[in-house]
Image (cartoon, rainbow, N blue to C red; front, top):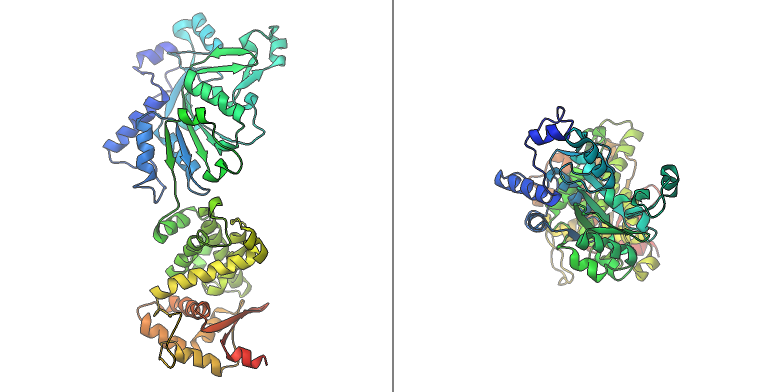
Length: 487
């Protein structure tokens, strides 16, 4: 609809515009997308057969919605994408604080203006992007913030008594009339505020300092909540929960492939980083596996959740670590190295909540353990599995490599080796090259170096080799020779 020529209520009526509630608007526009086989929630991955169908059913049912899930599960993103289901432009009575519908005005201002000007009442248009309101629930939120309060300055300026409803200053919810209103972390909201909310949901009236205004607000409420909050910081009061039409459970990605897609989409990378650094697919898998390991780690409080932001921040750190090394060595191209994963530890430690035992060990220790656990999980996909218990004198594929380390005094990969030195160092271990040729013969030359380091780290995790972290790099030694040399 061309809106530039529609400036009055008369022109609006003559255009054939039909007013409808926001829930009906969302419903009809969603139905249109479904008929045309268009995605309603683009950029959301892993929810195609779970959360999105439930959310679409809730919209079709004209429900207010509660998205319940741990942090980093795209709850707020889903709510924001609902804006795309609104009409592009919406008419309001010009000057209205609460987006009055010209066909059904509800505020004193709009009613008086339409009574005075009738068909010539001015009409303004607002874009759907302006019809999204969001509030983070915190214990200090007041009724005045979200519903409104008496404004003494307005009363003085207009020479009105406090008993007149025109002295009310509307809060966020009335101002979000005919819009999507999102309240994040709903259980953190004080019970008395929640009670005020369900009065709006059920009765369509608001109460401010003794005023009881019948304002049939037209709202689409979306709430988000974390299951941990129900017992930890607060809860959703039963009457409000009862008035929320659909409660939808969100979840983390079920596969590494989905997790990788999310990370690649959300990571904020400099184009020069992606051009400079070659990242093997194994490195991307390993990065995502760290998050999967964290969700089952005994040192981490699983109830707090492991956000998808862990992988995103870690990937950004990973590339920055490789970029920093390349710049220091004055190199225009570099391969991602396994040692670069030590650069993601700060991204991990800030995203995990530790239990008491984890606090005793320290967050950096837990982060390194997660990297090791990820290696151990992915190792059998690339190389023969190493059993915990092996029969004595049995031959295994790694004997030659372990014996090579027994014969050598030490093998160290420094953090800041040049690309040429790094490749030469790994190429200098014949049994390592033989294992790659035998079990990963199809791998590209540039990926093979990361895989060689991955193999060494895997042998460390399976107690075939030892590694030691020095200030300048990582040293690998055989398991028993290091003990003997220390005697």
